[in-house]
Image (cartoon, rainbow, N blue to C red):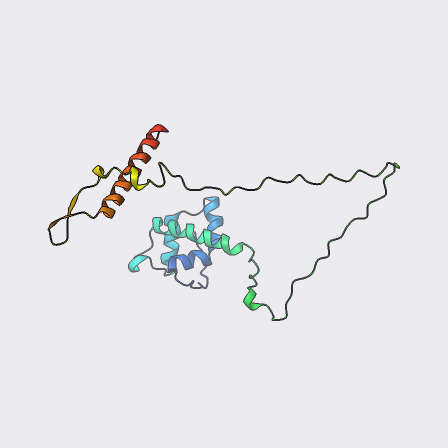
Length: 196
């Protein structure tokens, strides 16, 4: 099998095997389809034409077949029609305005029967006032009055930054007891409704 030597156009970022296969694409595709050529014979033709493989060694059939897949993909993409470039708003003339489209109303023929005009539609019914939608779920009481707080849930003393044990102020004990009671109420509510 002899392939006539052709001028090989180098493609940017592609190797010599790719360039040779791309230059002879139609002939190689026809010979592969008819069974006249095999990858070892094509690699022999590449050597005859002076096409080096990786690191200057002769091309291998496996490498050539892999490059052939890429060549076929690129040729099929190049054959697709190019899409027109997108017109960006920044590239439009300053005085450009979109076309105004008039909506046409088709003329309606008069009804054939002489029926009386339809009764006017009744006025819409008034809607009830909207209630605000509550999106947060709250479990347990939102606020527990000071009289109902169980201060036994809050510690009487705490360790300050200097490591001293000091009594906890009443306001702090009340906040602690309130949080503890709310947490207990939330837990009971979750269990009541089958929560975790």
